[in-house]
Amino acid sequence: MTAVVKKVKKGDTVMVLTGKDSGRRGKVLRVLPSEQKVLVENLNMVKRHTKPTNTNPQGGIVDRPSPMPVGKVMVVCGKCNKPTRVGMKAKESGKFVRVCRKCGAGLDK
Ligand SMILES: [Zn+2]
Picture 1 (cartoon, protein in one colour):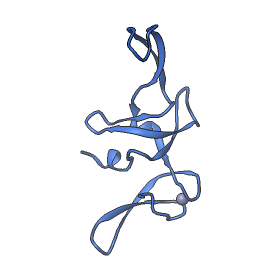
Picture 2 (cartoon, rainbow, N blue to C red):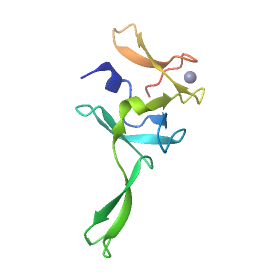
Picture 3 (tube, rainbow, N blue to C red):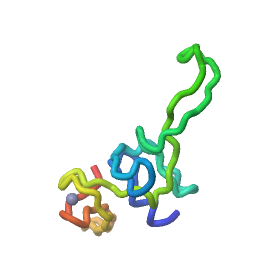
């Protein structure tokens, strides 16, 4: 595990830095630490061909988000609403919490 992935967590809002979705924001649905990738809601959409199922009897082509490299996104601070680098701060308990480098607000809920 590396520090990079630890800084992005499921449920975070992130902004895309490069590519066709550059500047767009979405919520992290999954973190894939072994691949250094994140799956973000409504971003990096790809068309998938699917077979007919009960929920989608027609089958066909659907748009689904696909994982993107974690280095392509930045966490958006819930307080100052800006994309920021993530700092780590030690609490009195010795646990580290993530903080916004811009305004200092905690990023963990
Ligand atoms: Zn902030």
